[in-house]
Image (cartoon, rainbow, N blue to C red; front, top):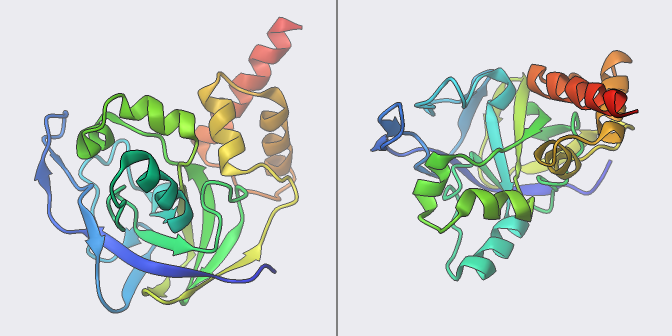
Length: 223
C-alpha cells in the first residue's frame, strides 16, 4: 500500500450554463463545496451531467484530477487551474490520476472507488477553457485525470486521505491506455488489459473492452 494522497477539494455543479452544443446547457461548471458529500453509484449527491449520452453513468461516476497535473497546466496556460475548472469532482494531491493503473481501488473517506478510464476532451471542455486547439493540446499532453466507479457508496470531503488499497498487476496506466487509444491502438496494451479482464483481475468498461478488441483485430489483420 502506498502512502496516502489527499483530497484538496470536492467539487460539484454550481449551475447549468448555456452551451451551443446539442444539449443546450452544460454542467461542467464544478466548484468546491464545504463539508461532507455523499458519493453514490452515479456520483456525488446533488451533482449532475447535462449530456448523459457522453458523460456520467456508473463507469464515469466520479472524475478526479491531480494538483500535480493542474500545476503543470497552470504553467502552460499562464493562470491558476483552480479546483473544478476542468470539471473534476475530486482535486487530489499525492496520488496519481493520469498515471493511475486501470482498476486500482481508492479508499476516499468512507467510499471505495475504482479507476476506470481516461477523460476524453470534448468540444464543451474546449469552450469552457476558451483555449485555441484545446482538444488537441489536452490529448497531446496526456494529463487526462481519471474516471472512477463507486464500489462502495460513502461520504467524502476535503482533507480526506486517498489510500490506494489495490493495484492490479497488469500495470496498464490511464496514460498508457489514452496514448494507445488516441493513436489507433497498441496491441500490447490491448492484450494486457483483455487478458486481465478475462482472468477477473480487472473489470473493463464496455468501451475499453470494445476498443481493445478492435486494436487486436487490426494488429492481426496486418500480420
